[in-house]
Image 1 (tube, rainbow, N blue to C red):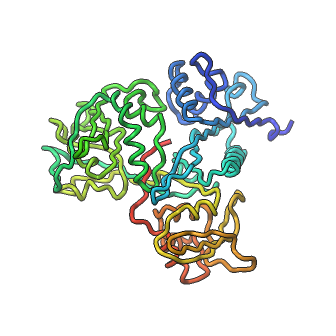
Image 2: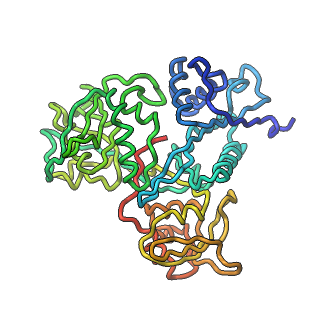
Image 3: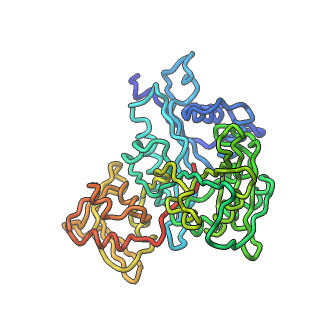
Length: 431
C-alpha cells in the first residue's frame, strides 16, 4: 500500500452519548488540544467542548493514518484535524451574510509536507460553495499558511495598555451608567449585546456560544474549559437604562507591577459604552494600568485628556476572508458611487478563477462574466480581492505592494472609489 493510500479522511459531527462524547469525538478534541500545545483535557473538559461543538453545528474533518500501529498515538488518533461551523459576516449596509467558519486546523509533525491540509481545505471549501455559501473565514495562528488557499487579511486588531493612576479623566461626558454584576449574569445579557454590536460593525463575525460562556466565566478558554476563577463583570446601560455593553475582567495579582486590570471579553454597541466601561474599570482603587484589545482605530485615545496614556503594544491581522462565490459576494456588497470595472481573478484552487465585470449604477451592483475576448482592467488574486472587499485595504495600497496588476491606468481610482468604506472593518470574535 502506498503512503498516500494509507490516509483516510472522515467528516463527522460530534457525538454525545448520555452527555459524554463518544471515542471518536474524544480523540478528535484531544488531538486538537495537542496540536495547539494546550493542557491535556480530562473527562469533564471533553464533555464541555463536545457539547459546545454540537450546539454550534460543528463538522469535524479528521485524517487517519491506517499504517500507524502501537505505540504511536496515531494508531487511534487523527494525524490532522479541521473543523467548520456556520455563522454570519457583516459586509456593511446592515447586510449579514452566511459565512463558513474554519477552526481547529492542526497537522501532526509526523505527517507534515504531505498535502493533507490542502486536500482537506480544498474539499471543505468546495462543499461550502456548492451549498451556496459565498464566504469562508478564519482567524489564523500563523500568517503564512492560508494565503495560498485564497484567504486574505480583512481586519486587524490591537492590544493596548492604558495608564490609569488616579482614574481616567475623559473629555466627554458619560452617556449612561455602569453596574457591577456577577459574571454569570452575562449569560442573560451578552447574546443580545453581541448581536446588536455585530449588526452595526463592518467586518464583524457572529459570536458563538463559547464567546458567551467565556464572558460569563463558564470556562476560561479552550485550553482550560473549566469555570473561570476571580472573574468580575460589569454591564453598561444607555441613557434609557437599556443594556448595550458589557465587560468581564480580572485583577492581575499583586505580583504584577504596576497593579493591573485585564479586560477579558468586552463588547459595546456604541463608543459611549466602551468609554464608560473602561472609565469604570479605571475607577478601581489601587489600579494603575489596564490591558485589553480593540480596533486599530480605537476611540479611547481621542476620548482621553492625555491620549499618550494609551499605548498600542501589539497590532496584527485578525480575520481572514475567502470569497467562494464572486457574483454573490460582489452583488451583495454596497458601494460608494457608480462605476464599472473588469476583474481577472486568479484562484489557485480553481473555485473562482475567471474574468468578471462589475457595474454599479445608483449604488446597485451587477456582476457578470466578462465578454469573451475582453481585456481586464486589473488582475487580482482571490486573496487580495478579499482584502479589498471589506475596505480594510485600498486598491492603490495593493498595487503599490505589487499584488494587484493594473492594465488600465484609471482602474485604481475606480476601485478605490467603489470599495471605500466609512468605517474601518473590525472583528471581535475569536474562533
